[in-house]
Amino acid sequence: MLPEDQVSSRRVLDIPEALETLERCYRLLASARPARTPLSASSNRATPPLVLGRFLKRPVFDALRYRVTKLDHDLFDVIWPAVKKLPDNRNVVQTVEEDFPGGVTAPDYYVYEVFHEFLTPLVKDLHNINVHSDLPLHPPSDFVTHQRPQTKSSSSSSEPLVELNIDPNDEFVLSGTIECTRNLQGFELPINLKIGKLETIERIITTILMKEDFAKITAQSNPESDQKGGTYYTLNEVLEKPSEISATLASAGLLIALCDREEIDDYTRLHGKHWPYGRGVYISDDKTLAIWINVHDHIRVMTSTPVESPGEVGLPFSKMFTIMAYLHEKIDFVFDYKLGHLSSRPTFLGSGIRFSLIVNFPGLTKDPDNMKHLCAMRGLQYRETLSPDIARISNYQCLSVTESNCFNDFTTAASNLLHLEKDLSMQNSAHIATMLSNIFRRKRSSLTGADTSDYEKP
Image (tube, rainbow, N blue to C red; front, side, top):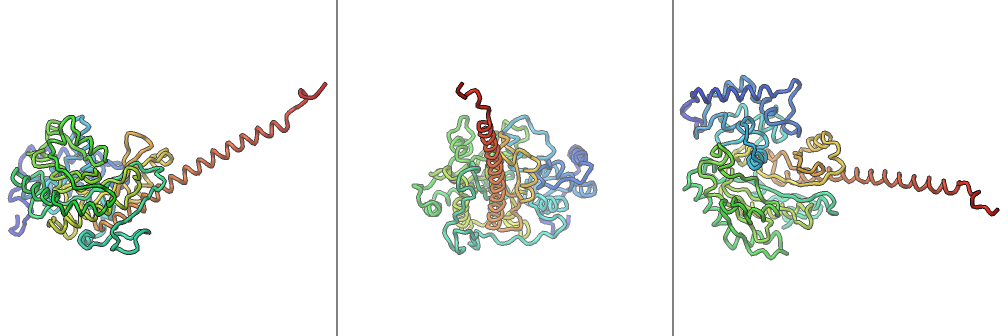
């Protein structure tokens, strides 16, 4: 490698077994390519092998197969979520699908450069960016510049709170969450860290979270709450069976996909050697905020929409904004001038923010293909749930846009879908009302014109 190369290993991958494994992976991805033009990742119908097969063609694969990052990660370490046969375990499958929906992972920061011929166009596609266009410079974070989104209820960007309810009558939205991811400057991703570094990050973050200043900051976004602060729990406590903490997080919509190390034979590839040590979660007293530490990324901040008003997305975003602005003042985060805030999850590059809503779509989901098309056209990821009428929608893009732009784009798209659902339900109601009216009219007509001879006096 060249002397100025700061991202690659000094060796090439020359282990026959590893190279054969990669060749098998390539054949699997190549065989997954459909006869027609493959769908993009944002089509809501493309599987990870289909998407990866589109970008990992033979010339690209041959150029990358021997490369190794400075932390000794090869191409298989990047694409394993799409090609590895996972154990028949719901926790493992959910963990992989929810955290790596594109079928790729970043085991270290350096893969984005070492495998850039493959990852750069794929990342663009995952974020709904034209793969043939140049990737622009990622804009400065709104959490640093303090640029809040403009809404009907906020006359200027200096408004302390953003109030926006996209389902004011509580008809369709069942729950909602916002997640924002960051990684600390000067530390590798959690999967690569030894116990000492894991403990250091845990101590840095929890020291900030447990201070009185932080409690005051979080209370500002919810003045009516009696919140006094929060509590930090280790991941061992969360993973206990049964776990009251896990149940609390689940009921608040703040539980992320987790699995025990015994549940997957290759847990080091998923979480690192020391899982679950040095990890945990901070939970606010009012159970509307969870901050996960060292789970794939150093910090994963999550807020939930109010239980009594699940369509109220503005106030949770205000809370997220306040918390992240505070953390940006206290901590330096890893940042790339084009990819923005780096993450182990390529779908969280850039602004690193994800908006998700669980929504009841009784009308639109009757035509699943059309529903997926409607979401894709609006830049929304559509995921089915156990109920055919209920879906999870979230934003695809958070790269090359600010956090506030993500918020505005998502709420506009989600509101549009809700209007379509409402219009559809009103049309159905009107159709039913018309049908009933016709039935009653026919009954009245039959009574009016009926033969009354039986009722005449003799």
